[in-house]
Image (tube, rainbow, N blue to C red):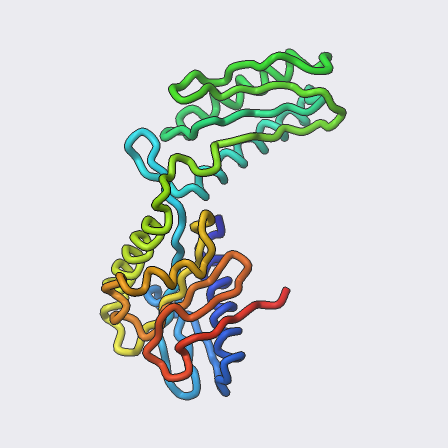
Length: 256
């Protein structure tokens, strides 16, 4: 999951590329006072620009979390286990940590899980492979670690399951989340005296960014923005809706 500054820059670059490819003669950016994140002057007209994101949410033990943050936390945890085991000199093969279901209070258990994983690695240092060891018992599946046959000195993970409990209505959920983002940002930018532009990075990875076009008829807050621009995770983008002549459609792609 990108940091706030990275998110803003990815969105800015994508929209800048779109503006220039759409025939804008002059495009000048400056940082805003947050809000907005930026101001952009396009052919003599200034716009306030706010960058945000739409991402999957998952409910764990009655609490909601962004899917991207769950994956990032698990990735950091597994990386920490690998680094410490390498420093100790106890990691002699490939170990796999299975995470069938995320934890709502992962931070509380992290140090305990790390130590249990390291203890397993120490005990299996001189073995080619080993039976699975339980790191944490929980409903819906235990967190386990197992040493696999192989020469790689690494620790990897499998899980949580891809959909993380999402039902078939993921497109409707994406539209609901987009409406929430638009409404929240419209309130945040209500003080602006210039037209406002919303740049939305799609991190709802279960759908393609173009699916947001299907949301437009039901978005009540579109009128609060001059333009809403969707950015996907490869920095390409398109205009979802706009009041600007010549901004009605089109795509942009940022070169590497």
